[in-house]
Length: 593
Image (cartoon, rainbow, N blue to C red; front, side):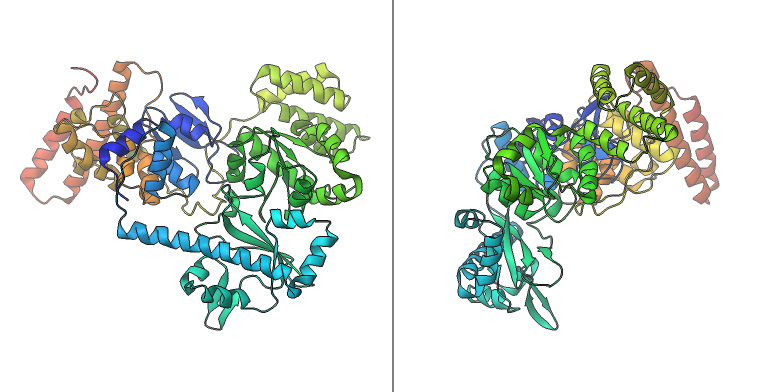
């Protein structure tokens, strides 16, 4: 679907990249840019940079980059036209009616067919649950205490023990093999066709708009695996979807109850806790946290009370914190999970546990304490040091002091002694290294960060980054350098775009350049890497001129040296020698005349 360029430019201009990305990522200002943890891969040290001046973003960890439109495309799993419409709605811009291209019609048709196939599959599974063949699944749901109303509310169902019953049903409905295979509902191989789910109690997984996009299945009997989720597909990314979100997003409670499994969510909704959600067969990810942040600012972790559940909570807390979500941890003991708790103690007791849920930092301090022998003075001191080190993570002095007093009281530590240890630890904590970053973990990130060049590559990037900045003057750069002087292929390509446009008096922004590569993630990442090479902050005009001139000379010297190495023409060699001498003596001024 094609929108006129002036419309796309207006949509991009009316949606400032910082507040848009701040809806998904917790950003902090650092110099002229904003930094946060990348929403596209797991990391602890923020490496995701957003530039308000260039209206671009770049992750120094996984290499992703782009502008406000490409961010919405990546995060919301939308096409370019869909992202433009999303941002137009946000800015109150009326878009013209335009025709879809044939490729866009085909892609939209495939997605619609997949959604239709999932909807039919959900109806089929529900029908089988009510049939005589579904007696075993009905008994299972009844044993778990689910009412008929709850079964209907969650659209629960049953997949027959025959291996191709759903396939035969959907084929009769007219669905093509490629749609059924891509959706993950069936497996098609040389050995034949087999339903992905068979002989399982079925749990439809819906997106926030109540559309079925996947399934979970619990085997009836002793088969393996016990629980099975749909494979990921164009509609379903398990790291960015939450079970029960379609109901929880409408809750009046100001928090989400975050669980580990389908039955925990269902049991809590049935008991009146309509804000329960669960991740889908995976640990909590930054994608989950950013999804939660759209709806609430607080999460109560209701993970299992065993060792695995405690570890899961310890992993989830920093992910939630990085997304700007406060967390508390609910104590389920003596029961293992919310479902079991609800059966034995009921909703009123659960509500009481919610009120008593412990602050996440205090929970972490309790878990850390449990790993030390408090009867051993050496280990007790080691625990105090570990807690002090953790307290150094609070940037705000008053917040740190509040937590220090709470921890000191909770673990009977002299507050002044702990305060002194925190001061010593804060002085000894090494600066966070920029490299290495964590490798991409979420499926959406398929590209590792490319190795960057040395000083020459950095010089080329800095010059082009300046050229597209608000104060940049690419026409001045073109007086000293030609596109052929750049060794990096991306820098050369950008110079070939910017130099002629500047001579015509046209201004091309970094953000606008990204639109040309909306469908090319690799190229966007490489361009955003160029545009992330800022000049140092708070330079005077004279200082920035001096740095830019030094970089121009470095690039030009290298280009002339390379040409000298290749040329066989004595006259040209003499000319190169003169040009090298001139570039050293020449007064280079870019900022003023």
